[in-house]
Amino acid sequence: MELTFLFADWLGKSAWMWLGFLGIVLALLIFDLGVLHRESREIEVRESLLLSSVYVSLGLAFGGFIWWQLGPESGMNYLTGFVVEKTLALDNVFVIALIFSFFAVPRIYQHRVLFWGILGVIVLRAIMIGVGATLVSQFSWVLYVFAAFLIITGVKMFWIGDKEPELAGNPIISFLRRRLNVTEGHHGQAFFVKKQD
Image (cartoon, rainbow, N blue to C red; front, side, top):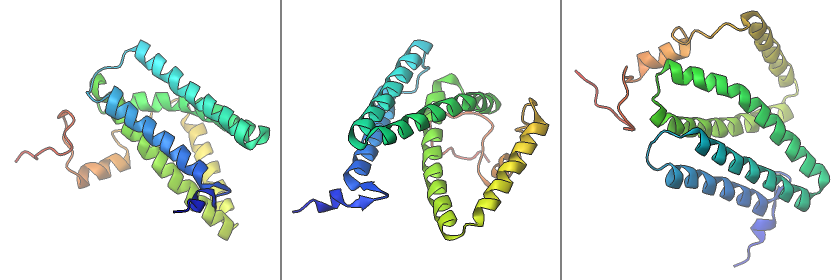
């Protein structure tokens, strides 16, 4: 059986590179949730710093691989994106702390909630980037819609300033509370909780 499909061009790179990258990410996700954090427990600062340094080191090592395999320009592009993404992730810490506080998520479950939340964000971001790139390539005027959205969002953020968001009055949370079975308390890690009559 020939493996020529591994060398086929897919999104500008060989399929084997994409499959290797996705395989590494999947292995790390399985290792993190299936091995290191199979049981829910509070994660101490020391463990958190150790895991963060391991994951940052793996990301930098992958950047070194990109540099070696695809050249300095691709390597520099990757490392630039890596640093920008890490910088933007720091801003998310405040939002995550706010959400955990609002929903009173116990520390013992915070890693699992964060893990699935970030995984969901990765999937949604990939979909949005794919759809956005397709729209822009087919309809260039969509860039003006995206630009207007960013400008409106920036102005809104400027006027809001440092005020904490009002999560209780958030229309999305209100919508979800009306449409889904939402309990006021925590019930461990159960996926489904029998509704009380």
